[in-house]
Image 1: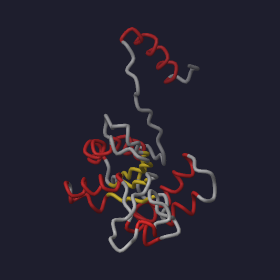
Image 2 (image 1 turned 45 degrees about the vertical axis):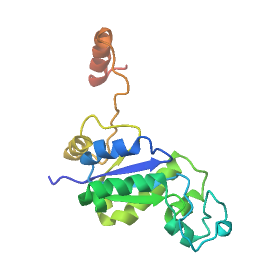
Image 3 (image 1 turned 120 degrees about the vertical axis):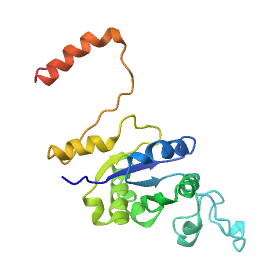
Length: 196
């Protein structure tokens, strides 16, 4: 069975403190990454624009496409640095700001939530990767969570089992050895179909 690509969906806002390390540590596990950024936009650095002509000195208006096209965020700059360091990955990372047309259309329909942000990221993934996205495994990629194991192995296992999704619970806290006996009882009951 042919391996299906794994595309990460990252929804971020002002995570620049951890993003460079995340990209260096985790991009080796992903075939592609779509980043939906909700960070505040920097005003464009265009000498022809007077500061007073900007709708708000800290946040360009969504009604000004020319300003948005030129606007940057710290997240975008970090991704640009990573791509410069790893030029072979340039076409594998897509940056979308939530104020761009497609995500903004979804986010104006309902209050911003995890689900509406994921819907916007999924729509942007389909737009960026086309039909390839419909044949890819998608992984939620949190900028403050690092892969310990290769997530492609999880996707490959689910694919080999004929599944179309997998829930993979990452270990957030390592149990103490004193908890081993109780865990083995619960794990045995779970695997045997008993109640936990």
